[in-house]
Amino acid sequence: MKLLTVAEMALRELSRRRGVLVLLLALPLVCYLVRHDQVGQSIRFLLLGLAWAVSTTALFASGTSRHIEPRLRLSGYRSHHLYLGRLVAMWLLGLAVSTPFFALIAVDHAGEVRLGALAAAMVLAVTVAAPFGLLIGAVVPRELEGALILLVTISLQMMIDPADSLTRLTPFWSSREIGTYAIDYTGPEYLVRGLTHGIVVTLLATALVAVLSTIRLRTRPHLRYAPR
Amino acid sequence: MTDERWLHALGQELARHRLTPDLTHHVVAEAAAHLRDSGQPALRAFGTPQGYAAAVVESLASQHRPPRRPPGRVRLRASQITKRYGRRTVLGPTDLTVRAGEVAAIVGANGCGKSTFLRICAGLLSPDSGEVVVDGVLGYCPQNGGTYDFLLPEEHFVLVGAGRGLDRARSRRLGRSGAATLQWEPARDTQARHLSGGTRQKLNLVMAALGDPDVLLLDEPYQGFDRGAYLDFWQHVWRWRDEGRAIVVVTHLLNQLDQVDQVLDLTPGTREAAA
Image (cartoon, rainbow over all chains, first blue to last red; front, side):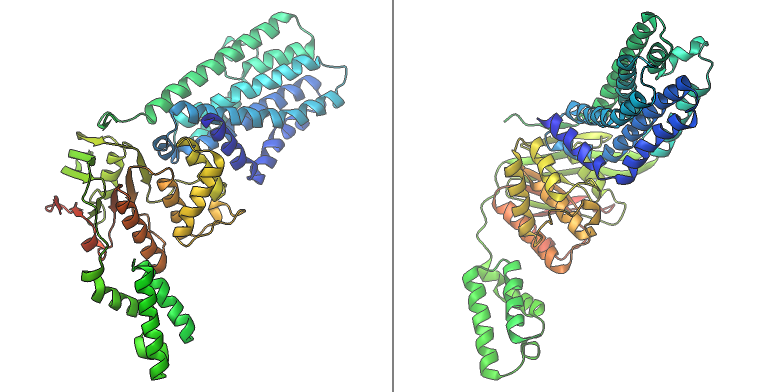
């Protein structure tokens, strides 16, 4: 219940930031349109734009809550209510943003791509991006530095040679792999690799967010509560 | 100002000073009778309602202080708290014990560690040495921040209430009634970012007190309050004290210190809790 309340309030707060919502939609759209003449590139860029938008939103949501979470801890919340609640909110928001883009591609490139795999790539992009943005927010408390780290990550992801083995170390490699499976009709090994990578990165990022949040919001050892 | 408005304002001021309804009615009726008999306008006869109320309260203070319950069990005990930032010592060894039904004020010059001490008491900041023992549930009102810009006041009540284990309806009800005692009626569609500084602090205060915590730590919660709201705030504090809560207020305004149970002056060289 507490977790869902945190998620609900995070969503309510974001839903009132109309400018953010517009930009959240505009970023993947621009990525998609800029390479619209090439089906594969436009969809891969859209997936990356989606991940970028969701992770940036998660980063800023993390920053907004940073000063309020200590008082919420004192109000009876546990650390996991706070970071998981926010994570759930970011996932729901990401899925809501993804839906119109899925519909757009389904109309724009009907019959050219595997739509089921494309949906999986979008879900995975959102799944990875939310905890990754929260992780950056947990590691770097200042939003500008966090935004720049995200920019470096996305730029690296865009510019790195796909054949380079280093590409597997980038956080959003999974959606690229599944995107390739969806667009180029490659073998199922792309799907498996992508799913595995996405799940591992999600679990790793979530675990690190959990550790960092728990440390930051821990009850300090000098404070003891008398037994009641 | 008409005499009727003046008398109404006098009644409100007297209520803020915690005069009983009977006594308030009596004082207002006497003032009205005097105005009727003398034919003078109220402002000329008595001055401002605030000034006249203060004078009345002062003259009645010794006879009409409400009976106090004896302080109860120790709710907060901070022992030998010290804190340094780099080479700068912010807090020397500091002790504070607050019992149920007591109000402690933390005073001192800017930068003497008042907020730091309160954050240490709340467990939000680690001291370099010392310990804090709390008996009961803590409520904390920060000096600023502590709210979400884009959430409505009622959503803040629901958020804090859920943490305290309250359902939504009860959280909203408690929040609204807490706001009403601070002369504030939260609009249903005004986000926190659109509230004035004082109203935002009222929201902060209501959030801190939601769910009846046993220990209230208030860090200059009245910033931005107008005079009336400031007096209402102290009425709140006295009521919480009478309910048996332990309250610690960081303040730099000294005009209420004669009514608190102890004063912890953190100005260097005066680290004593004076009862």
